[in-house]
Image (cartoon, rainbow, N blue to C red):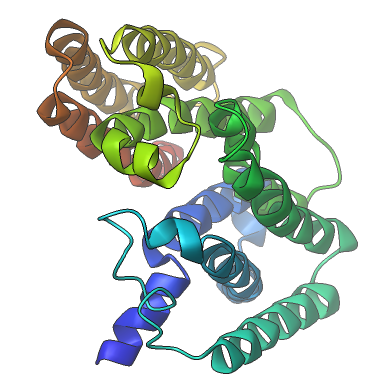
Amino acid sequence: MTIVRDILDLIKVRILFSALLTTVLGYFLAVDSASFDVLFLFWLCLGLGFIFSSAAAINHVMEVGTDALMDRTQNRPLVKKRISLLSFWIGVLVLLLFGTAILYIKFNLMVLVLSLFILIFYDVVYTPLKKITVLNTWIGAFPGAMPVLCGWFSVRDDLDFLIIVIFSIYYWWQLPHFFAIAWMNKESYLNAGLKMMSVDDKGGHKTAFHLCLSTFIFLVFLTLPFFFNYVGYIYFIPLMGLSILFCYYIFLFCIHKTVLASKKILFCSILYPPLILLFIVLDSLV
């Protein structure tokens, strides 16, 4: 079972799951109920899943030296050499070829271009920037929010206000999420030479400020689908309840600047992607 765990680690299965959830949401918003096609959605998620998995795996090989210096990543399969580089690159190539083939054959060119752009931006732009500038968090959030566009453009060839808002929701959601992670792991990031805001933020004041600012902008975008009548109270009430809890944990962090408070922020933030999808779907059924 070790090899299975290593493969799931290499493809960053939790991040992959979140990316595919946003893809499903993009598709759901783009297609009318009469045209909803489960098989179409399956092939879309499969093709994108292969591409995103290869992007995550490439990130592992690019950061193997950095991972060896951090407690939370020093047991990764490439660091411990449990998987050979030959096997690794064969696997990446297979994932990339199958994903590209599926998206090219079954979908429009925009979906394939977007998926490859996400891979390139994530591995070639964002990953090196982590050792260059603290702006890497803001820059890396762009490819992180783009899977929803893949779902949208699988059936649409235009942009409208709703999908721009949904993209913005996922962009701004990532910032407090990753600020919390950065505070939890600030010592590891310092040891690895990564340029994270938390590393030089001894008192936590910069982290607290950016947590508050990014959360405020995130919550503004989160409410827009309701105020522009795209969704109703089934979406609005539970997500506002979650947001009150989210803001409370951020308030605790601003007061105490503790790792425990950042863990609570992280836990709460993880709930947003599946719940946003769930409540938009439920709202549409009423």
